[in-house]
Length: 489
Image 1: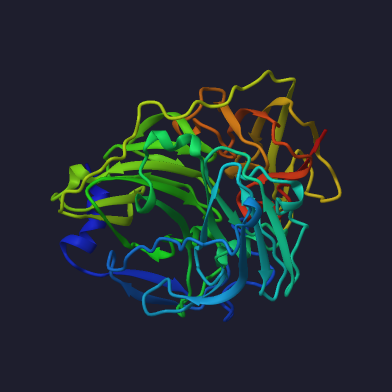
Image 2 (image 1 turned 60 degrees about the horizontal axis):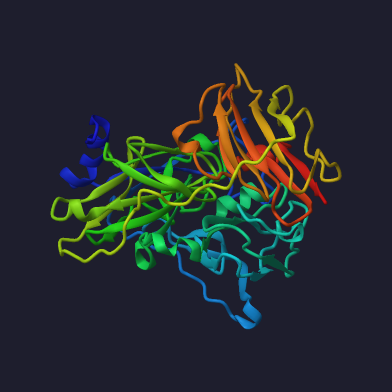
């Protein structure tokens, strides 16, 4: 059941028919974002030069589904793709054109559908005027294809990334990871889905095909021309679902699987259906042992969650809304024609791998030094240095990591923590049990202000080399909140 604030929010768009208004604050320059990003939420936002009110009628534009890319070759059992990285003018706000950085001209990049144990090879060609690279977030990949922040693609250059897909089915995503430029590039649009489908899960008969829908959620701020404003994250109040503001999505009265990704630079979504129950089936790195039910799910930057919604019970009863807290961000319009639905959500999904026996326990602290301008960000008291190995682990070993947020009053910042290459299971949070969202295999976990998270991880991927661990607020990591892990034989 909707609460009072949700009903008031919906009333503007539905009951009264009055159009919503978005206020776009002007930028002091004509650029969409700085070429080298130095804005961050710890500093004052750029000065305002006025504001323009733009009228947007909610739920009048359809939510697009990101295009699915087809391989250019499948010779030798390898799916080969070619993706240009290029600037483009995209339509996010009605009647306005937004300059963006894209994969293949699409603001939400094309979706790659891979398969467990079938290799994928992607050639990215850089058509931007600045260097870039690509990280497969959640991928178990060789170090040379992980998108290390210093492994860049120069303007006009290309780079080949090999993804062996030696992992379970999961919702991954790919995005820029260039040191100093990641925040700017991802904010402008360098993000897309990479979905791994696992033949071992076919017997579950979860919704598939057109009923398996990826939805990229993020926030943004725009100026009066429709260009992105790279300022204070608290001013990024416009929420986008697959690149549209408050769109609608037509659904049949049956089950749908939604793969929800938080691609915002800094935002925690409080996703809910206005009091109705959601069935959660998967976390960052694949299916849960069993489905869980929730009335709200917190999803921090970089995290993914998969839910199943059965719209059959809503046939003939009006739309269903997805909220971020009290803010309606997407409307599902339920068809009235009864359909045959052979999908299901079984009581058991997929057991998690055994935890193993830990031989090492580590503490990793994330903390800011606010004495300078700009501030300095640390992991374990050190600023990121690509020439320094911060932790060395032996392949195949199991460890326990305690992630501690060292930021306290008067600057109690939060930090989502991301570990490359491997997946982990959360053991506890803030000295107590895990949160409901912590269950399952994870690669990114939210650490609240003054909080801590304890997890167990096995370095069982068949690769060695240097990988990253960092805060997944890119405006924190570029200030130094990033460190380097080396896996050795």
